[in-house]
Each structure stands twice: as structure tokens, then as C-alpha cells.
Amino acid sequence: MIRIAGLKKSFQDGDQRHDVLCGVDLDIAAGDFVALVGRSGSGKSTLLHCLAGIECADAGTIHIEEVEITSLDEAARTRLRRDRIGIVFQFFHLLPGLTVLENVELPAQLRGDRSTELRARAEALLEEVQLGERKLHFPDRLSGGEQQRVAIARALINDPALILADEPTGNLDAETADAILDLFRRIREKHGVTILMVTHSAAAAAVATRTARLVEGIIEGATPPQVIEGTDEGEGADEIAEAVDEAIDEPPEEGAGEEAEEAETPSTSDTPGGVRASARATELLNHAATGTEDATVPEDSEKDS
Image (cartoon, rainbow, N blue to C red; front, side, top):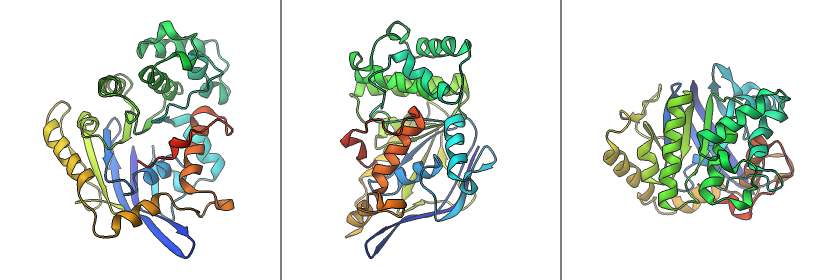
């Protein structure tokens, strides 16, 4: 399903070059639910952006469903992201002027789907996430957990092969987060979709079938082809949670934390116009899900994961 080989990415900040991804090798099988963990600044968000085709890697390859996305131009990457990848954000990014149902339908409409079956498909997804009765409501009438469920339905509308989830429970209370994680688990079972979830939460990582730990720009403790620590679903949750806690809480080497943080969010990037990498990535991720480049991006959506 996903094969990452020798992936490297750096950002230029004035005279300083920050190496964020330093040769990532990772294989993820179809239908896997993988939690990507690591300290802030370890490169998790950058890796997710490269997988989404938003950031271009400096070296290495990414294959998704046998398509080498690192060789595609921007238009082809956008089509792949629209048609085969669903993205779920920490901050939902629903369009406030559209109803719940219209938000779910929008990605399909943007790919030219005007079929009579689209509304029925969107309504069925809302029923699946237990929001069928709220379909004509606007996002501001929904709780945070309800908005995230709408976002998950929206991510599924084009029947993607892969869902990328960037801290999907980071803006929710513990009880609501548990419900969202259970929904991801049920979606994987029903739709057979592959899920890669970036998280700081040990509880969230324990729900996944596998975990990958990103340390100083590489997946730690494995050689190509990458071996990801995994368990059968429902087993080994305590061991996974303990490993995640270690991945997140492990103190960095002296000075490494500051450098890593700068690497994730440099003041300038190598993208045209010197746009900050994190802000541009968030904007493009939003565009990928909604099809609108001018959609509002909350200021706190630039928070590094």
C-alpha cells in the first residue's frame, strides 16, 4: 500500500539548513492502522505532508498503491490527494457557510461528481458516524466531537485508499477522543481503508494495530524494509502505550530540541515566495480536503504535532 524509501527533507532558514527527514524507510500494508509517534519537532508532520503530496522530498521515493508520488507534478499530486487520500485535521476545517451534509458532499463535487447517488452516499456516511439527524445543521451548532465526525465522513466520501489523520483527537476531551478513536477502528474494519495517524497520545496510539517511532528524522530501530512494531488489535495496549510515552517523553540531547523545533517550523522554507513551511502545509492540507484555497486557517492550526 505505502512504501517509503530513503526519504529526506530539509528546510533552509537563512544560512542554516535543518535536516528534518534523514532517510526514512517505512512499509505500511493495505488495511493497517499505524500510529506515528515521536517528540515535537521529530518530523512527523513533515512526513505526513510528504505522503499527502504537499511537501516535495529532497530525495527518496514514496509509493502509494504502486504510484510513485514523488515523481508526479503538482497537478497530478493534487488529483491523487483528492481522489485516493482522505485527510482528517485536529481543527476540523469545516466550511461554516455549508451545512453538515454539504460539507461532506463537497470533495466529491469538486472532482465533478454530480450524480444522484452522491447525496445518498453522503447521508449514509453521516448515519455511519451517527450524525444523520444533524445533516441540515451548520458546523457552529455542533460540538467538537460532532465536527470531527463530520470531518471523518468528509474524508471518506471519495472512497479513499488511505486516510491521513493529524492529531485527530488533540482538540477533544478524553471521552470524546475515545469515541473518535473507536470510530476510526470501525471505519477501518468496514471500509478496509489504511490509516496513518500522527499522535502525541499514548491512548490514541494504543488503538492502532501498529506504531512507528520517528526519532531525529528516521524510524528508530529498524532497517529496510522497515519493520513496524505491531500487535493484534486489542492486545498489547499497555506495552504500546508505554512505548509511546517513552517516544514522546524521552529528553532530547542538549540543544537538539530547539534545533528540531526550528526544523519543523522554519521562518522561511524552500517553497516559492519564501512561505513558511508549516503555514503553507496547513493551507494546502485544508485545500486538499475542501477544494478551497481561500478557506480560513485558524491561527492555532499551525501548531506543530
